[in-house]
Length: 261
Image 1 (cartoon, helix red, strand yellow):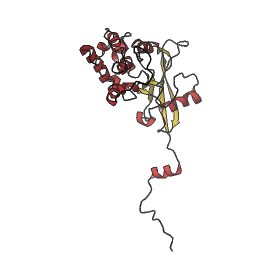
Image 2: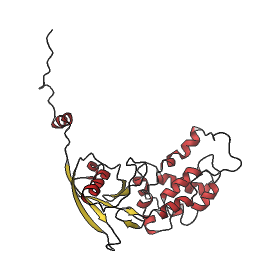
Image 3: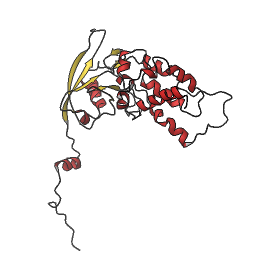
Image 4: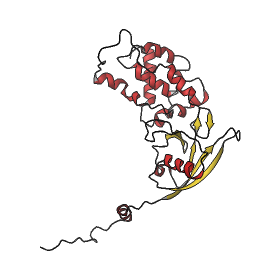
């Protein structure tokens, strides 16, 4: 039996395929333009450029880590899980709120300097780290937990699929603050609850097992509650979890008017 042969000229390899088969990675040189702030050294923030060579399929967080580990150990930022679950590395990348661990370098135009700065509307403590206390206080104020009366149940509280779907979208919040700090109202009004707090109130207001909806609605009926929302959709665009934030806020407004939830 003759040995079969393969005609290499029939389907010529592309350069990209050759590189993939050989395990080669096409690296690029990028510039990270990071807004630095250290109140112990200077009262004003400054922009500092860092050049590094990276794989464009890496994440922005990977590039920031390289800056800290290889070029400037004083760079300060938050990170934890690095998989888009903890929400701790929310920052403004090229002018938009994003999670650094979910943003690929190739998707933020690596041919130009990639600007990185802290999220807006919260006091900057150092570099990319902001004071999250006001954000979490607003979250606590809307009572983000199940409120029931009577004795503790002896079995789980069963819900239908329809009941769960009513609030399922807003259970995805990871408290990264990307939505709240993309809101122009929040930037200019330090008392506004902000989208994230309202989203977490929505999650329980529309939960059929909960009995605290009226209390939460009264809290959000305050002048700094849902009525401050101007429906710009910035929050929805910024959410890394794809939550329909603006829709949730409108549903809370409707519940306040109709008292139906």
